[in-house]
Image 1 (tube, rainbow, N blue to C red):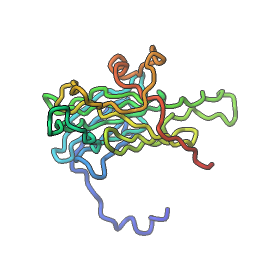
Image 2 (cartoon, helix red, strand yellow):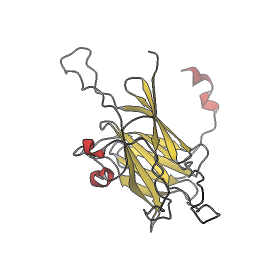
Image 3 (tube, one colour):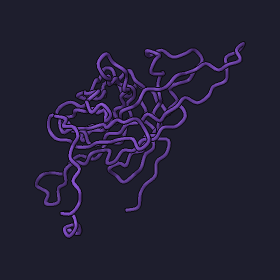
Length: 242
């Protein structure tokens, strides 16, 4: 190893807090310019959010089912509502508040990106279904007798998010070396209790008829996710050179 000559002299950073999780940690993410939060995904399909200031777990949920491991995870609190004109007869535009922080989870088997709202709860925070992003499904695994057989790859290889006006860009590197950019809606403000103001458009995204996806709900909170916006078409898609 190239670092063998000098790594013995480097300072060691000891952990400031130990968090017990079931299985092993498969992925983690922290915003570069956001709130002091770290999202962690495990091999048992569990996700948790750690507040680095309080040094404690503030939200925890079994997001995936059937023993599916979390492959990619991301946090975003950067999305903002775009300014809107005042309603007729008023001189001041209504204050829309602040959107909820979003947690994005992609598993190893299901061709979906599950989006959760990180909402204030009685104790810590709650993770509530916010949106479902449909991604292409990889081909099935090759036969075991094949000498060059390879296991089925996860649909999403890498996941990156960035907030914008009225949405959050979700950029995914896919199994087929394509990069797909989806626009995830922000949903109602965090203090709206799920209600939206009349005349405001909060769910701006490329959506398709949800009837096509009936019976194909995700494994985590399937019924709740079926009632959320279903984003099936990327805004941008381009292929990488092999």
